[in-house]
Amino acid sequence: MTIRQRVEELARCGGVSDIRDAAGKRRARRRRAGLSAAAVTGLVAVVLLLPVSQSTKVRTGLAGGQPAASATTPTLTTAEITASLPRGAQVSSVIRYHGKEVAAGDDFPGGSAPVLPICAQTGCNPVVWTSTDGTNWSATWGAKPAGSIAGETLVASPNNLLLFNTGESTNLWVSTDAVTWRHVALPPAFAAMVVGVGDVIYGHGRFVAILNSRNPGSPVTAYGESNTVWTSTNGATWTRDPVPGAAAIFQSVSVEPTGFQISGVFRQGGGQATWTSTDGVSWSAGAIPSTTTLPASAAQQTTTAKPCLAPALTLRGGRQGENEGAHGDIIITNTGRAACTLQGPPTVEILKASGGPLAIRPLTSTLPTGTVVLGPSQSASAAVYWSNWCHANPGPLDIAIRLASGTVTGPFNGPPDYNQIPGCINPTGSSTLQVIESYLLATS
Image 1 (tube, rainbow, N blue to C red):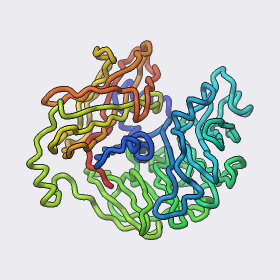
Image 2 (cartoon, helix red, strand yellow; image 1 turned 180 degrees about the vertical axis):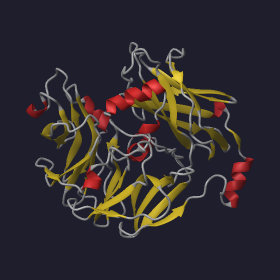
Image 3 (tube, rainbow, N blue to C red; image 1 turned 135 degrees about the horizontal axis):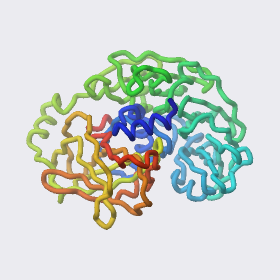
Image 4 (spheres, rainbow, N blue to C red; image 1 turned 135 degrees about the vertical axis):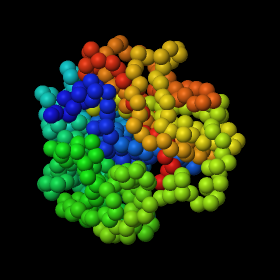
């Protein structure tokens, strides 16, 4: 079954469980781009499970005390770069490498001029652009698409630049100048990953990648087995490193002063967890307490905080394309003077900017009930998946979360993400909306 056929089946059946398994990829991008750009003190990040086709990926340099000369903060976001490119070209990852900015994405020209001659017939996925001033961009390299999902990720060490492209399988190219690229033969278990690389970083002389475990042909397509960790010292030779404990979904990986840390959740029960390593090879596990087993001081805050009131909250969100639908990220902020609680999963509705509801059928959420505490000025995020829109473009939209105390409404046109409209994949079916990320306390 192709990706498109599976999405059409999901639209008919009203479910998206089969496309939840790579939310770490989105979460890491949101932290580096839209969500981190909000600069909300004490951010409460909400994390769950969904794959990526058009992500926002902005690398901000080498973490954990590593030299930053090879990779510093880009001057533009992926959306700003995309806006300066020909129609059909889209950037999903950008990094600063050896004094110039490097962007990766795809180009499906659809009648417009291709960014490279190789892209004229079937498009290119991936494509690499470079710029010395952040304004003028040149396409330097492209490859014919091996699949229909675009999922580019750039990561750099002082000596080389890596470009992952993950979709129906995972591919890797390595370059020293961002112009000439060499394809790397990955181990079969690595290359077979569907929407595979959830996150990848470089630090302490090593690349560390966390991979989604949804193998093609697996009888359990929604959840698979435990996610995996792969490491490399040179970007070309990769080994799988065991992570102890129960089967887990890895959401992000970070470089710390003393090593590395993975954040995620357990597949059974959804409890948050972290795994740490001093070398990226040997890992130890340790669970993060849930809201029901908090330390005494935090538990007291949970029991004394009252439910959040709608007038004391603000809301904003945006949408980006995913598997012919639209993944919507929502940020809700406590603007009051006291801590309050939010209980998920939220009840969400998409509205026209004029206030009227769209003809969208809400799907019942299968997420567990959970409570988070928002202190003053703290934020939480949630996410929805909107599928199968077969009407005219509705224009600017609002997003609404309904609470017992009222409804909180805000713009749904970005940031984070922007204003993607789902494709029409079943003209006789309903347009549907499902909550796929609920409120969870931040892991960092």
